[in-house]
Image (cartoon, rainbow, N blue to C red):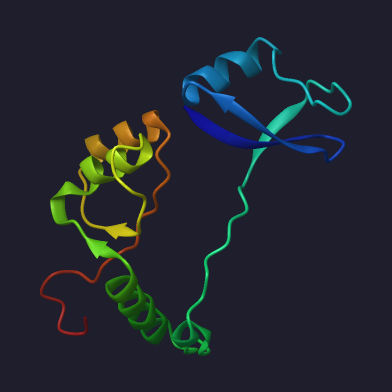
Length: 137
């Protein structure tokens, strides 16, 4: 099951629950999705809003240089996300389906695993890491 934030052309925002991303596409194409406020069929997905509770250390200003920002992000991820290594997809799916408790995780995944996570509706994002062997990293 996947939940999308949707919006009609009049600006009414609402949630839509779908079996997967393909189900959303099929229903939209068949004009089965309408705004619950004005019944407009011209509906599109919009970015979800969410909040992250900031700790006192997260309130410090970010450095102005890109390398400093990258270092700050890396430090934050290392401190606040459990490293599950190459088990990222497996652990993300377990949390998505309620088999294990939700928590912040980081790790690696293959392109095939990422496609499967997207199909299953598991939200994730990729953070670039410094290239191996890069003396500047």
